[in-house]
Amino acid sequence: MKNYVLGAVSTVALMSASVAVAEPQAEVLHWWTSGGEARSVAVLQQEFADNGGTWTDMPVAGGGGDAAMSALRARVLSGNAPTAVQLKGPAIQEWYEEGVLADISAVAEEQGWADVLPASIAGHMQCDGTWCAAPVNVHRVDWIWANADVLEANGIEMPTSWEEFNAAAEALQASGIIPLAHGGQAWQDATVFEAVALGILGPEGFHKAFVELDQETLTSDEMVAVFDQMRVMRGFVDPNFPGRDWNLATAMVMNGEAAFQIMGDWAKGEFLAAGLVPGEDFLCASTPGDGFLYNVDSFAMFAVDGEDRQAGQALLAELIVGPSFQEVFNLNKGSIPARTDVSLDAFDSCAILSAEDMAASSENGSLLPSYAHGMALRGAQSGAITDVVTAHFNSEMSSQEAVEQLAAAIANSL
Ligand code: BGC
Image (cartoon, rainbow, N blue to C red; front, side, top):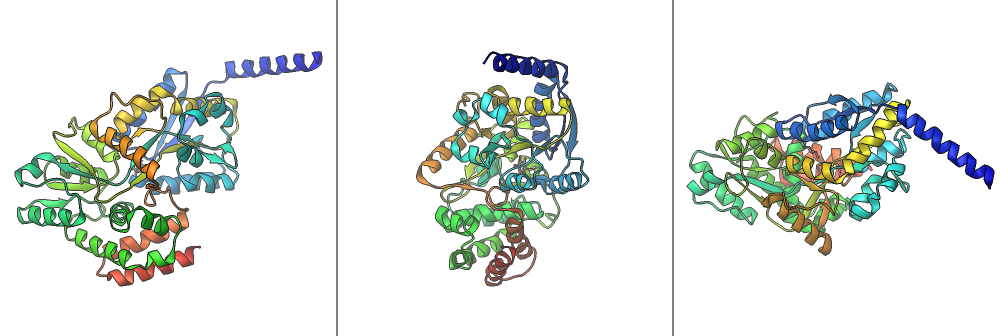
């Protein structure tokens, strides 16, 4: 017993000696490069520096993170993984299965993450019972943003059904306003598609299609109607949409060139960074229909050598889930905190609506993972869906052909 106690004490002494000399370092791979995003990640950089950390930034531009994920693959394959990576949803599990993630359970347990995170979020952060990622926020994807003056000048209310949306868009188009600000990038097509799909299929149908990959739902008349609506939406975007970044589409709504954008609430981060006020300059509403599509940003730590880098990982994980970061970061980012114990007093009406709708949808079973933002499916399946969505949006493909391709692509990807 005596020996055991002595042994334990000397281990602790050794550990604190090494912690004392370790200078937290982190090379952080992320895709937060737009105005609102950069403002948000700066909060983490500042907190890390304030706590003695040295941050090496590895931003990889490209909304939705496709380019960042390619960069990550290249780094891991070359045996030189970054210390911390913006990673989310099933991709966390996919990397865990490759055996390349660090276990951050010690920090999670010490900080009591299980007590402050909703079970639905905690589930994404755990791999085989260990903690393998730290959640930053909850973004909602199924939002519609509007320029308040443009709507008022044209006598248009925020649409509450897709029929109303189409009628409003036609009226705006007739007045020379671009109804829908959109960037023709596959992930943006997928973002609009999943909002339309949630509205038309309903939460249960969405779950069947994009979580269960149920062939009957994928080829149903309702899915044909989803593609029909996408064809209508295609008529509401301007000719210069191909390749446009999402934040430039948001800017079109800000300056009144366009009326609406369908985009997750990182778009609100852009409005806020430009000094605009929700409810006055711009409006937010959930896209027509029931349900809530969540997209939780998180960071995973990759297994790396070196006490400094490991200390950096522990510090980052602790700060990310810490209450002060969760508040300040999310005020900038447009999302709401992942922690349930952060006061929303400082948050705006769109964030409050998001939190209320999230709680209600969690109660009634309509809280759903976003497929377009990598929360619902593994990469092969979500990629297969997006390929069809974007091929349909950018061609004359019929809705019937699209559902057939969708079903075939899913069957091939399994
Ligand atoms: C991420 C957001 C990011 C957005 C645009 C989403 O997938 O979750 O954090 O702002 O992509 O890049």
